[in-house]
Image (cartoon, rainbow, N blue to C red; front, side, top):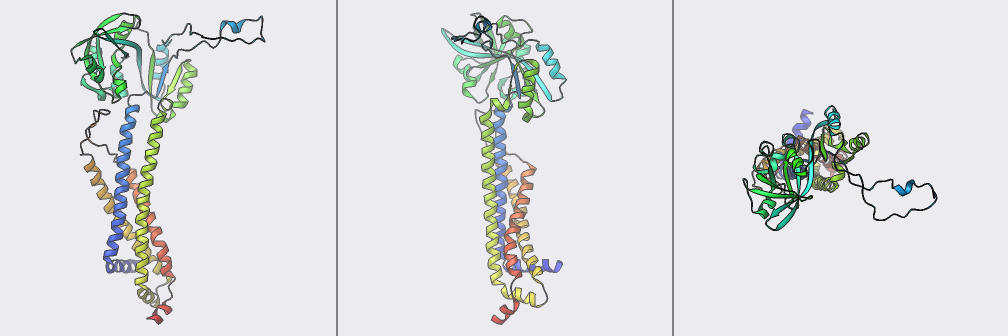
Length: 417
């Protein structure tokens, strides 16, 4: 094998320019493959974080709906008659979650749950002089919202803990604050659906990147919203759950819905379009990267084919001096593998440098105010996939020319010479 390797290196050096072209082709393919996957994966994580960071894996709540059993259906006089009922109204339905404390105790001992937070939601009107701006107020537990839902990342001005520490305080969306011409320290007037008015002090500005969402949403402490609504301390409308495994959310949501007798919405059902977009972007990235490596493999195949035609006399001499067809085949496979390894190593180094350069390119977007440069995912699996696929591609690219070289008849070649 040492002798075969020496011969392969000698043949490579004899055709150095062609060897260099083939190695550069592999280098370019590996560089673009890893860079493309790292960049697209970083973008996917950034885009998905717009949803996953702020969305619970499971949301437990009470949906307002019409009673499934109407009084007329209980009538026994005409059991075979058809009952045509129109304009049904929901009755005895409340948004409040019953036995919220027992549910939270059960969640706290469930090993599948990372954490959960309470929430009180209510529509309100923000009064701007004689104009009422419709909005939504969310009563949150700031201590749990920060670690579970990265609330701190979206508060671009102020401290999210102030809604708990400062009485009658509120955090409003930046677009809403611009409509109200208000800033931190200003007081806004809020009117509930029941007509009650309250004065709240702005302690922070919120920006999620979703303009329509930020124009209507506001956040206060649970106690503040309960007081505004005239409810007791046990009034809770939502329980937001984070799981250890997000993919298990659909099954666990069904289980919680049956056990707690609540409506349970999983994150996959709430955000199907985002998962579809992520899968499509990943497929496109892998397809383009693999295409680049296959093209590089064809370059190696063409170069080795040309080398065989040019080195027919060398192959004939090798066979005439005792080298078997298998030895000749190994020599050309070694040539292909050497080209693949050298191009692959150079490609990995260049792709890493290119990815690091991308992370220094300024990036500014209202959707992700905390991200200042383009995101790149330095995932080791991308490099491993690139190495394995490049070696596989170059091996196949060298196998067919090597097989052809192993079948060369030295007698025919020498007689022709």
